[in-house]
Image (tube, rainbow, N blue to C red; front, side, top):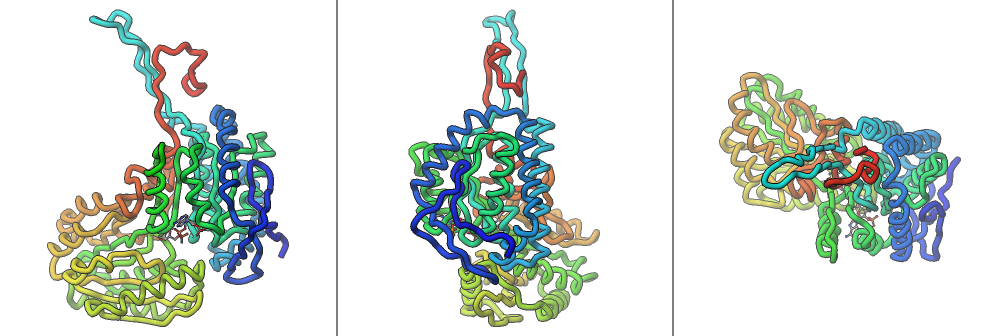
Length: 504
Ligand code: NAP
């Protein structure tokens, strides 16, 4: 192997080791030893981030844009080594890692161009009215300012794009906020090499060293200490509902509560309209199976549930999905823990009389095979557990008796990242009944597509009502995600010389 991790934390420009270590659990290739994170290291990283803020928070947008572009360049300079360690640790195929690297550098460059344009500053100006009666009005100007140090928790399923220098880090750095990353213990080596790229960019562009730190995990106290540190002003989190909720609660209980932007799980229901099913049930069934098994189903946007009208078209849909799942090869899951959780999720379905197995296959160790079940609308509504995310390639078909029952079912769904309608022109009236409900339930509503695959663009919303996220007003993907890390400040009657540069 051309690059071997040294297993240290990056604290404000210094690689720091420690006595306690944990060993990585790669899907293939050699395991490596990493220093366990400590509360003391978290403290050093957060204090350094606060110090750095007094410089970094006052850099120009151009300086930050150059920094973001330098990070992208440095990631590309380590391309093959990143792919190798990333694939070993996550089990994701080389092609997927290469694509994800492109997305990661693309996000960094997108934020560079976004802040150069400056629209996100939302600058406002109310001129003074000295002659206004009964009292004059002072001049008031407003601009969005960076909030201070931000903590970032990446997810196991996107070791690059939602991790060390992923979307949250890019958005925070773009806004002018130093970042403390809590490294994911599923991909510590990938985290380390990306941190190495960020450090090289810091040195190249002369940024303060405390602008970025990586504290590896290996101990759950590390994550708790990061979100509770008084210097941290917001948290960007991508991960499980259980982990996200625990950290969200800690943020709310702080003496100074802070926003916790948690992107959590989702079952992403799809509603298949009768005319579309009449004309293309087989195509839709096979397409669903493809989306369901992409990346071993380890996508937060995985469409786990299909809602269909019971009858012959539903039978054709089910048969096509089953045939496509049968032809799917076994896939490696991200961690032993996720593979076990997948088997436990399957067990939840196996032990229910209300659920009929359509296609079930055993999964062992870190390897997953797909599973398909079906149930009725009534059973689904009565059993809350059927609506909980199973992270992996498991699908549930819910058969209902009418479009009205579909509407009732839609109303019962919890918050989602996405909801989808598959429809033809003849389904317009039925789709119109569902749309107002689905847009209340999800951050993104789709017609005739599959939700896996999230475009990184200005108009993307990747979030949604709880439990899809902990903050329905925010997105973690796309340029709008910068809004999480800025806050509006009004400047009343300020001399020009004292205004932030973005207002001058
Ligand atoms: P995870 O197990 O929740 O881990 C995420 C991070 O949080 C890790 O750094 C983990 O630390 C830490 N953590 C979890 N629970 C904690 C606790 N109680 N105290 C302190 N730290 C804690 O999630 P994951 O397995 O990486 O990711 C899979 C999940 O993410 C799936 O549910 C998927 O749907 C969701 N996801 C959502 C999105 C989205 O955008 N909405 C995107 C991708 C994935 P350790 O390193 O110690 O484990």
